[in-house]
Image 1: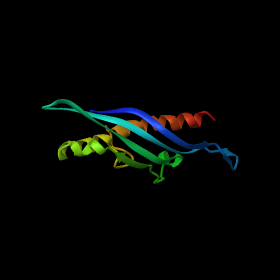
Image 2: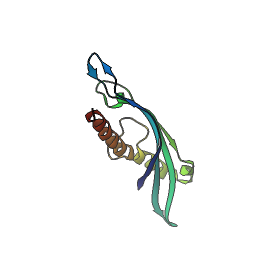
Image 3: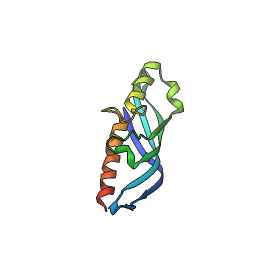
Image 4: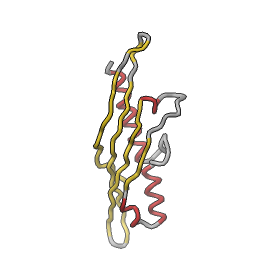
Length: 125
């Protein structure tokens, strides 16, 4: 199971310029998502920790017809302790290799939270 433990190292800018009389809602953020992957084997419950660094997360990510996507970088030194099948399953469950992320992945849940944040940001005027 993959558990998202924390989000930290949040940096970037958000601004609301006016162009041609219309308020725009823009942002450019980066952050780190920390996770734990837990599994059972003959030794009992085991776990590894890692993170996904998200950069270039901008207002264009959710815009229709725009091919903008954030840069997602996995950092998990302990991934090497997994056998090939478990490693592949872990990476698939994380969903960090494509954008938009596949349904049922940890990154899909993150995407949904980010979409909610972006919508609230626009509503705030």
